[in-house]
Image 1 (cartoon, rainbow, N blue to C red):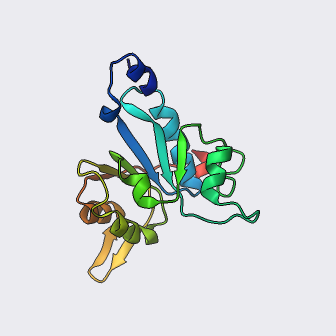
Image 2: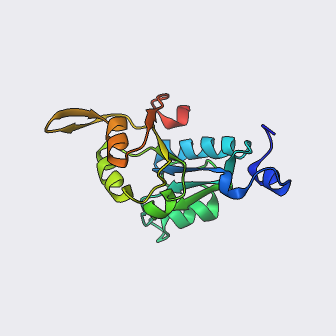
Length: 174
């Protein structure tokens, strides 16, 4: 069953939809879009994950007047931050942070570090109690008490576990 998709496992009666792990990527810049593409590709191959990977998009209006989230969903591409790269049909851009995150078991944070505290404030009380986080964020928050690691900030503000993944410096190199 390891390589079977979640949809196939459900169709064969081996997995109930409510038992599948859901992943949300919080951030949709260059690195966030690459992360969403890789996560979506891998979760689609595993029967324990829901096929859909949500990606929270800070809504922007593109020069052509279209909304970034709508363009990502229609073209399956982040034309502003990762042009020319298809994200995968199971990536769903959502401009509503709470809606994007509320059902996720796994929250993957990929935003500029200076926005994490504000994002977490909006998520408090709006995520699953069993959710866990992964931070792909570089940098740290400097507070009056001193420097604070982003993973610690996420963990303390949301009362969830948070681990860190480090890798390529430039998303296009991933």
